[in-house]
Structures are given as structure tokens and as C-alpha cells.
Amino acid sequence: MSTAISALRRAIQAHLAADAALTALIGPGRIHDEPPRAAKGVYVVHGEVDAQDWSTGSDHGCEQRFALIVWAEESASARLALDAAGAIVAALRNAALPLDGHRLVSLRWLSSRLAREPRSRLHQVTLRFRAVTEDL
Image (tube, rainbow, N blue to C red; front, side, top):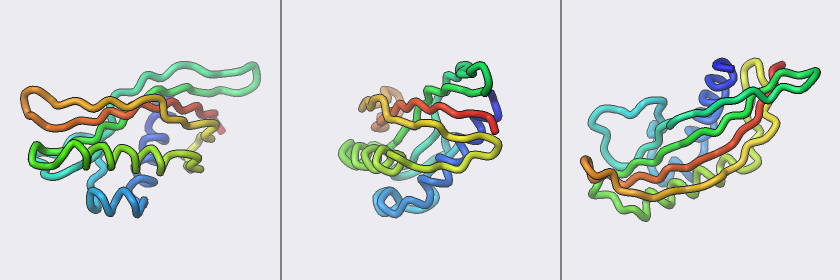
């Protein structure tokens, strides 16, 4: 199960880093596994993952509900964070992501939530997705 999570995260990160529309909005090198220190502008990080067994009688699989979080510093607009979130959803729609040791069965966007983090005052768009993978 943890290898399916890691494989999906790597594939998403690589796919988003190569997406021209997203890069045009937020710049190159702005998709991170963990939040960077003292980041400026807009950036994307992987959020929480809830993984569950999705095995059948003959195949082993994993259902993942996960989040990608778009952060924008206070001087950046919430609109830019929302535009970046929209670009992420568009980039992942029908994406054929190659996964090490796994096959992506489905990936779909579930919801988006815009908020402002109270302490840092950063704009935050949390995108929630559902993915199903099978072991190879």
C-alpha cells in the first residue's frame, strides 16, 4: 500500500512539473513533496492521504483519497491560487500517469476548498482527489 502512495505522488509531481499551463501560472520548480521554508509566491504541496484496500479476488489494489494544496502568500491573490488549482485539476483530468509497480485504474477530482490560513494569512486551496491503483 505505501508503495502505491509513493508511486502515485511521484507520478503526480512529475506530471504537474511538466505541465506548461501550470508552470506559466506559478513558475518552474513550485511543486513540492513537503512545504518549502520561506517560500514566496504560489506553490503546491502534497497533503494528506487516506489509503484503503481495493483488492479483488484476483488483483491487489489500493484506493487513495488524497489532497494537493495550493499555497499563495498574502501579497498574491486568492484568484491566482484558484487559477493554479484549476490548472491542476485540468492537468490531472484523464492523465495517463505511469506508476512504478502499479497501474492507475482511475483518478478523479472530488472537491476544492478555498481558505486563508489564520496564522500565516496565506491563501490556501485544498484539492481533493480519489485514485484507484492495482499492483502489477
